[in-house]
Image 1 (cartoon, rainbow, N blue to C red):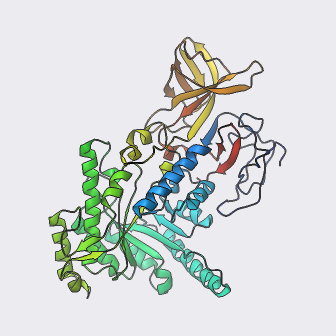
Image 2: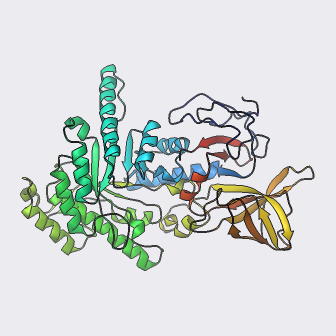
Length: 491
């Protein structure tokens, strides 16, 4: 235990060295603590979140809600026979990802090369870079990283303690990107090159990255297969296809997922995936997980219209097979054949859910028999001033909460006791957030709210993916206000 009563346990896998100290927002440390991940206290010494070790503003995560969300995702993926590579850009926390791994995550998804390096440094074997890569320096780093991993694994096998093999997957959506990757991996041993999995990204008109159109995606897949790199399948982000949850929105997302399957069918029909190896089809799954799981799993039929696809699309796939330059493509098009599909979803925001965007888009309310996700994140800020009737100013701002989609929501309050310490949590009615400054929050209040300077308000957030980058650490608390774990972030 350090000077302020925080327990510093032994290291554990997935916990980076992250010294915390007086500069760490939310912690009241008087000096630096060499904490290789400050990961919670024993049951006998878990400090209260209102104790002298902490300060406002503070980001807390509800332990029960986090574990509930992790368990729901694990069970659903198992039931649907899909794999999960959660997008760790949400929190960039080794400790939270360790929990996801314990709940069955196949690997981690990242958004850029910096996050890839970070997650590899955590000790993560399988990383999915769900983006394109055009920087030759980063490609060289991946090549060297995989070369090191293959050599290390060979040593582990010799010692009889081999673990999961290292893999890095990434997207291509252009010949330019493919040429850079192929050039960067030219001359590498086959066993190293095989660890780089390439997926063709399928986009939507007016959306983000990704090839436009099924036929163009299959053409690029052919180029990948001919480059000497390993083509593993097709991927995309269904969130670009729709922004709401109307029946029309859901139908648009379903059509996009069907296009992903059409690309997969075309890839297999062209003989671009070795016989017997499943073709990977990957989607996000945060806002439209119900549609993704309804549309993507199941074998694709090669040589005739696959389930859920448009006949015209698969006819294009057959055309590709007939004119392909792969020897077995003619055999693939000789008659209908079922090809196994390996579905990988990448949802990351589910771990904390929210009180705004995720709650509105929540696919779990549309999944038969599923329990709802629970919002886990709360940002606490003290009332600094009640300068006029109907207005309270709190010590929370843009540097503490997400605000790109919605403003925070006032949920609860800890009334200041006579000695200034915060009291127990009670619901807060009659309070609405109307504006944010860098370090201040404007709260319009009714007489019912009855806020006073010194009270501490708990705010729910919208969009967790732009919350955690504002914090070096978050505190996980149980239902008795005691700290279960302190998790760090690596932004």
